[in-house]
Length: 255
Length: 270
Image (cartoon, rainbow over all chains, first blue to last red):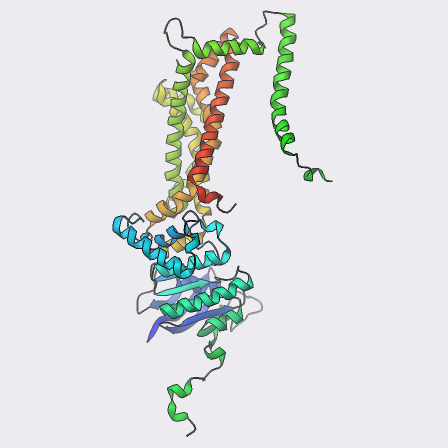
């Protein structure tokens, strides 16, 4: 049942503990929001899911696999910025998501044609077809992030990781991006992890909200203990739990 | 208003830009005129008209013995050495810079070595180069390569390391191998920097070229300047200096327009 399982994960830099005893399991298709104070290790946790960092101990497995040692195509990622390639046009950025796994990073002939038409379809879907020939630097922040999400999805990852993806956007654009992300998610049923500073955003988008905090705190040595998941909220039905319980257990109905 | 907020208008800006050139020319003409009225045989500051005549002669009249126009021969020889040296340096620094910037093992192996190598004064190595490679073309090209490669390599490696980590991670999540990251992500982004490096190092490249030609050569712009120095032929020297400056300026301008045309994404944000 569990698609992503995180088992007893610790992370430390030198003798500074960042995370300790992190355990969680995530089902396929769940949207997990990750919140917490600055420096509580939520970005570290995302980097470990991304396999950019390896856990000090413990295991992170996707669909029963081994803990990965480097980022691979199982994981898609969108950062707050620098997620798209500035030297490629919008369309080439999408094609790159298919061509970079080839030996020379390029597609030729019929494969290229097919990738181009798929890229055009994606551009139509994410509403960037009118700027397909432009370079990312000439796009607005929201358009760049839409492109970054489209690019990550084109590679068809098993899990999608978002590191404060809307942190640099203005409030209006941020709301549009929420709708965009929710629609995209309904279409693909992707498993998503999103780190955010915005609690409203976390509860609006997520099925679950994980809160990272330090359960133990040594006033003489703040770096001694690491953070872990202190709350795991059910964020469906606007954060009110047990709203669907009658669907699961009809016998609990009053008559 | 503060001085920093005074901005020259269009015609004023052009006049200001031309002013230093005009001033130098006027100062030279006056000084030359002074000396020539005192002594018409003076060779130190030939009149601008004399320089123009000499230039015309140098550019058009063939040498009596070889029947060839020496200035063009010198230019071709020097440009061949310069472009050879700069091309080899550019290729070397690109490969090394990408390796150092992307591969931690290559960084450990080379970065200290290149930092030390760039401290060696290249001209001090010139005698060794003459001994090892002889007095022919090779030693001159090698001097340029040794002179500018370490600096270009260090700068390119730095640029590669400045590519945001996010992009490198992103490329990995798209399945790119190290080779694909080097060739599709890093290379295109440092190529504009390579061109500006070439532009910056052309000055040193000319310096090393002229120094090497001055010491041992039988053709070349630097060789000719140091040859006619013996006869105090200031008109020839000045013509050559102006010609070299013009060549350097044109090469720089060509590289600049190439960079602008080849990398449209650089300007996209502006």
